[in-house]
Image (cartoon, rainbow, N blue to C red; front, side):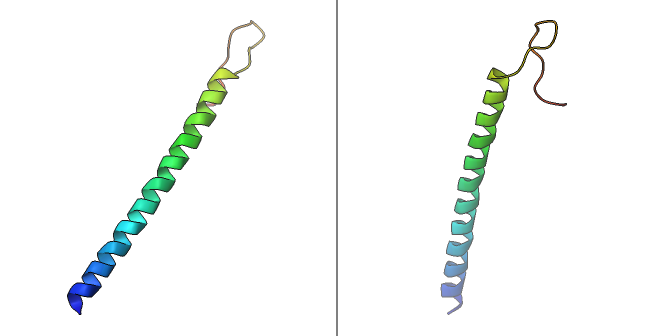
Length: 56
């Protein structure tokens, strides 16, 4: 009975980790797209130079 519980717990843990990693990959892709759009679409300042679109 105990080995069955250990296997089920391990399967649940691996499933949760796989889901979390997939969600983190999608989040990383979204952040990369937003960053690239901000880099491409940044506005020019009064001197005609391209300004930074981020605050830091």
